[in-house]
Length: 212
Image (cartoon, rainbow, N blue to C red; front, side, top):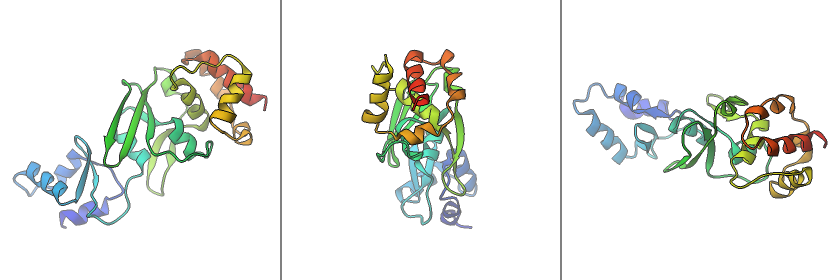
């Protein structure tokens, strides 16, 4: 089978360098072949050692949230990206926001802008779910509740000191829907606060939502 056909069959996957090399065992200089596939538009480099199918290959592509999981690990999609995915905010977002235990960073790639926000352990570990993006694609993503809390934690300078301020942040600034938040179960989320940054602010957020 030709290399183009192999990549076409895997066009909805993120391709590691090791996987690509395994497709090129018959070539003496595999590095040159990879560079050639990039030049031909068969492969699109995302970051060092990471590729997706290029513009010359027909077929579906990995969803941005799945790409985000691969670019930097450990990480999970959160913040505005997750809030938009769940329909909790009205805006469509373009940059993909993730949480990581590593230093905050970002990657501007041909597949988009990927932003990573540092969160400390053990708070980082709470509320991570596996979300279906397509029939075959799944990504690690914050639960709706964790995405709301992460948005507060990851917004520089934001400290909430009252329910009035929490209401303003949720419904005026972020334009969330009261009924959507009310339907979520916030009991477990309250147990995360002992180990959470901005615990007082998050407590006001949860208490405000519970009284809706």
